[in-house]
Amino acid sequence: MRDPNTYWKKHGLRSHPLYKVHRDILNRCYLKTRPSYVNYGGRGITVCDEWKNDVKAFYDWSIANGWDNGLEIDRINNDGNYEPSNCRWTTAKVNAQNRRNSHNLTWNGVTMNLAEWANKTGIHYKLLYKRIKYENLSIGEAITIKKNYTRRSQAIKANLMGPMETEAP
Image (cartoon, rainbow, N blue to C red; front, side):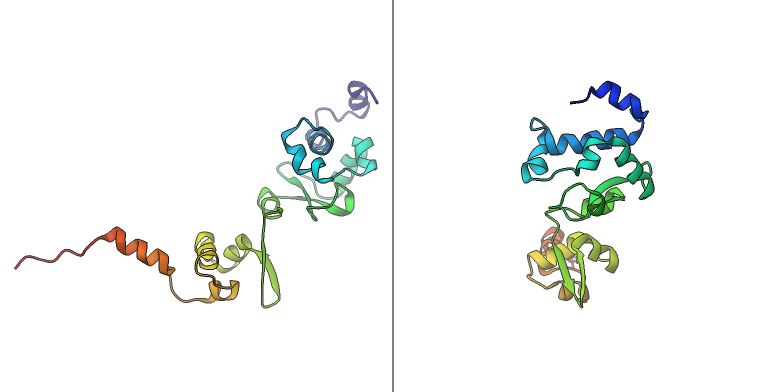
């Protein structure tokens, strides 16, 4: 194994933000003592040989593919490896929506996750979630329904308001 101190100094990337990204990717995939290992290396996720053995190759790919401060590396296929054909630089929001626990919903031939449907329709995420989860509506029904509240929400609102007061005669 190479001496990490001389290896990184040789490339002059030790102080560059991509150095930390590269190191974190390797740690997630190969360092069994890291808490995140179970979700990466423990699932068989690896780093392509080119990036694993050469931080300069990772750096060059990153610069050529839109890296900028504030962006995160994202694996397009969450079951795939860290390799040029499966990675992209995205915002934290896009990266958070591309998770194993994101459930894609299709309506009229368009597939998006619930957060994307909420953003596209202007309907609050929690309201869409309640309509689908508790009222067993399809995504199409949930986004086209005309009422403002789910039945459960209406009942909660009615209970919070309590009995109506009447004027004394």
